[in-house]
Image 1: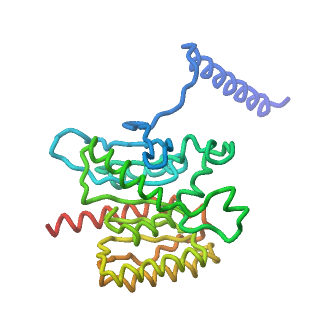
Image 2: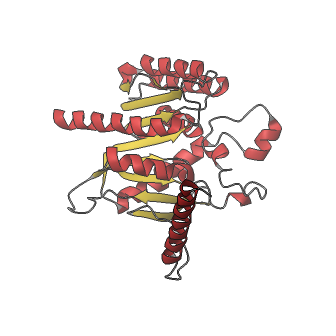
Length: 301
């Protein structure tokens, strides 16, 4: 072995030994590793009282929460709890630090309603979809098209609980949904538009049938003169070539209803991104949009 090789061997042995010792020191306390918890977060069990279903709310409070009882905070309500909590918490920490985050879980006792199917996310197919599919076998398995029931749960149970127990500003309710959650938010916008003031609809998972349903619902709102006072942010991944035409059609629906109070932002196309890849940028960019929008509103008051 030459001097250079011998020197390298000594360095490798030293580094390996140091890492081993560090591991030993880290475990010296004898305690078992434990799950990391997001700071200032809570898990709140909640029941869908109309349908006797169990859910959870993952609530994250801002750093300055409760420093003064007079302070009222905007609230971000989001779907797909286990998938979205961490990303939205991080984005809110830096971009919307004054906001309370409330992320709604999937149904916790869903196996009872889906013939023992224990997939954690199984209920999203039922809760976030607008209409049932033509395929009867799929419908029997997943019970699609129950968005109306889930919206009732959010309005009657979730929002009422949050506004009764936290320092919230009811005039600044925000909805965040991605994929099926984006489709669900689109439905809320035209079914019960006063549920939220701001809507973030990330890569909404439309098909021609659900989009036609929304077109008809929007026309109904126009006919009955329902105010649609809401700000709307819609995104799509650049690589979502099949989804882009449907989402562009949805954007045209929003534009046609600006006279009723809708304020849609220009479609956000996330560069070089597929459907799932568009999610992180959607979270950060939409929160920046919200931050700027609320700052403008505050300056104008």
